[in-house]
Image 1: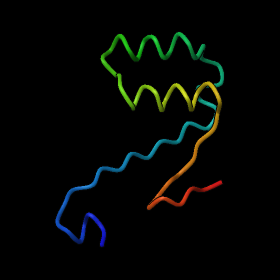
Image 2 (image 1 turned 135 degrees about the horizontal axis):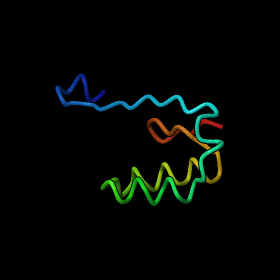
Image 3 (image 1 turned 90 degrees about the vertical axis):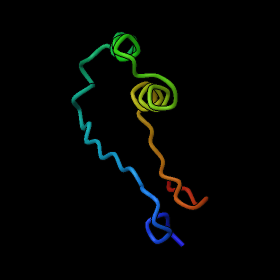
Image 4 (image 1 turned 90 degrees about the horizontal axis):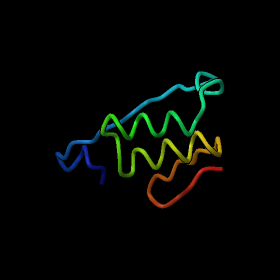
Amino acid sequence: MSALDKGKTSDVVFMHFEKAFDSVPHVRLILKLWQYGICGQILEWLSDFLVDQYQRVVPESESSN
């Protein structure tokens, strides 16, 4: 049973980075995001995405390639 079926809220974030951040110094961007108060798992995810350019989806314990 999904969260929606249980009457719970769900948040979804769609991001389309494409090559927008290829020309930005990633360390400087991560530092700037941290200075603006973005921290925790969101900053960690963005840092992992920018540094390694790798993304994976894990719905219900099944991960994508």
